[in-house]
Length: 515
Image (cartoon, rainbow, N blue to C red; front, side, top):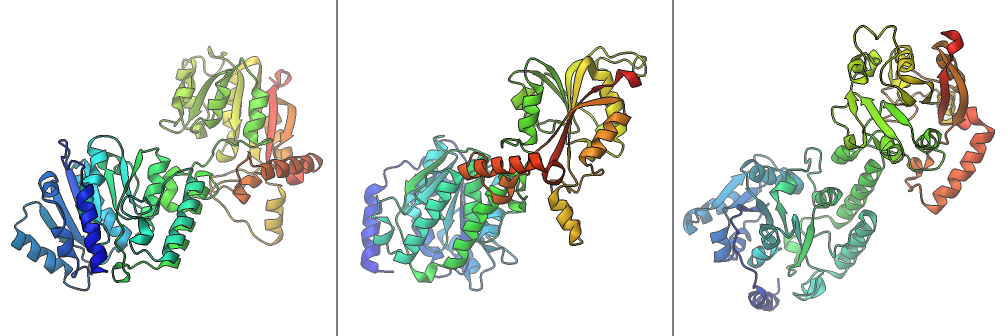
């Protein structure tokens, strides 16, 4: 590193340190991640200001199984400097940049700290401005603080020695991430950060990467949870001797990580690092989807029972103009406040577990009409999950009003995609869709009609939904291209419903002639 440039930066830092290092009665920890840092670690520790040492509870070094004497140097520094709040740990095996962070964060979470600041042991980031990183957290202005080398207070990245090609790559990746995640950060790729422990405690680290793009994944998760993110300018200390990152691989990993997140939240695929954001049956916004048709068929001003309601995404839309109650196996749906009341029940047993909540007594279940009646009962994609759907269909008759309607949707196993798969000798179960691995029954338009008629219903309307090609293409349903393709597909689905229809939707009433 250029000695003259380094000296100028030190003077600039000294003139800019105006932020109080006070901890505001918060427990602050500094996590120093180190790997082969024997030549830099002591210098990093020496540069931590005295008022920071006095205000943080612990400075903890996690040596990631270095091949040099980083750990021994840390122990020697601890004894020589006699710093009471410095601790050193050595990982028995190398965990990687992300894995080392996860171990450190877990340490501070378990010890009940309030704030943790991430500092690198290689000297790439300035310890002199540690207080700038944690000050917005201890004053409750943010949940996470990121240092940015792209902000110009300390001269910017180029003047700080960042190579031009890395600067351009950083800007391109940051622009892509901002656009994809609807954010507005000046830099995504600085490793100088501070976090609220309360925020970190809500993130699932279990399947996150151990590689360098862990920093990207943690930003994605913080943004998904709508935590407050604040940026502060930091100086750039750059040299090839302290960089262990393969730039091309890192860029590929970052791009891939963003795409995998978008696929997960759109329920296209469930990637393990973002699995907590995956919704198996999300609300389908596209025109001619099952949720679109359900909303039109239900109308307004009705008492609706949504059986197999899941997290209540469909109910949330219907409840604007209807009174909606729900039944499902979930303990507490995400949209539970949407329902007039919600009942947890195992639908494999029909409605037997829900009778007492619907106004039944043990003496009236078998013969009398129920006290609670509904204008509309919905069975959205539930019958295919049941071993014996006949039981649930017969129980639904007891909760339907005299002229009430049953609206059912089931996947169309005769869809062209399944036919082509069978043509080539393939029948592969998936996380969702027609061949969802949790489906026990498979239906065509003819067989679902037959099932309803055999169980005391008169079919009054049949419809077919279009295939959700937005999930395949990864486009938003309101994308102009998607809207056009959806209309074209709807036209051909109308012409060839059995072949192109994705789901069968059937509207039925009780057939009193068969009772």
